[in-house]
Length: 399
Ligand SMILES: C[S@@+](CC[C@H](N)C(=O)[O-])C[C@H]1O[C@@H](n2cnc3c(N)ncnc32)[C@H](O)[C@@H]1O
Image (cartoon, rainbow, N blue to C red; front, side):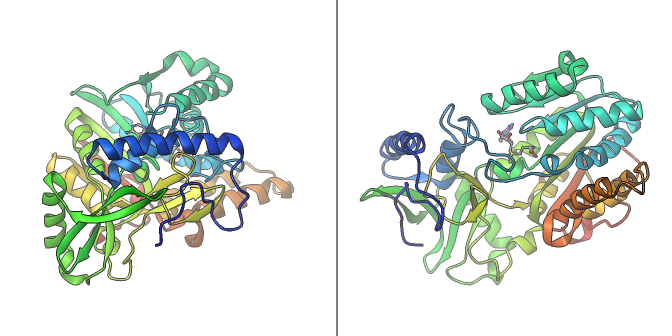
């Protein structure tokens, strides 16, 4: 991809307004300083970390709309409360198995899922001892507080925002929707000279890619990747590797004494992720509901994501002594946890309500919408039962 000015917008969209221009300018200055300090280039993971999470300036930390119609993308909890209600059934089952515990949501966005989950758990009479939220963005923490205080005021004193994963010995259920796709990844290429890391530099008023030999922990991770997947892929193949996601999972697994972890995200098992046809990787950017593939423009103004390698997560969980208790498409998980039950209480003559619900179910479950690309994975420790969410279809054999 030829380099473009960091101020370029995707084709067909209006130019940046002065406030946005100022923001990109500030981010460009910060990145140039970091590139200079690092001797001329940053790993893509460092670039992604900076543009997404720099306090007050990064995409997730800088007060942009992000979620919903006025933002850049829509997530399942923002589409429908049915998502949280279904997830609540799975959470309740695990809590019952372990004799009760806490719920921890990591990366809680606007707080919509927290409200839906707590409401549904309350209706089922399965109350967690406490609802914890671990959220990196100060701005989103404030939004979550406002959402819960407004929609579920009697819960606000029992929600605890924390700054780290729980201490070892923790008992409960962790949920994370679209967290792992937002963690920084490294980018690499299979070349004639072997595996090269794609790093980000600055030349002639643009961010540019450099392909350089990988070093340190990344070099070791890429060698392991090459043994596992590289043999079937050709020269020029570009993809990403996340060191952050398996490391996060390992830390969490080591602190969870009993309970489970339910991850929902878009992604594939390793063999499908690193498929010969997916030869440019899965990095994608979202800006004003436009998806494009140039992460070097609009630093701090656009979301950058990469798909999740679920095999790497399963391996990290098993290495930490957890069981992978289920892996399936979002559609199958939602059907198994009763998404269609929402129709029964509706008045059959209330066509508007029926249509609105049907539309929500379609967006969450149809294969061409979120139903197939999004997967649900559950890891547990000390839970014997077969989990309800995976009883329609369990795809663990593909991992
Ligand atoms: C794509 S958004 C998803 C938000 C929400 N779960 C939803 O489904 O609408 C990613 C969220 O994860 C948060 N986040 C990213 N890295 C995190 C980390 N290491 N710990 C906690 N939160 C994190 C972001 O600030 C943001 O709230």
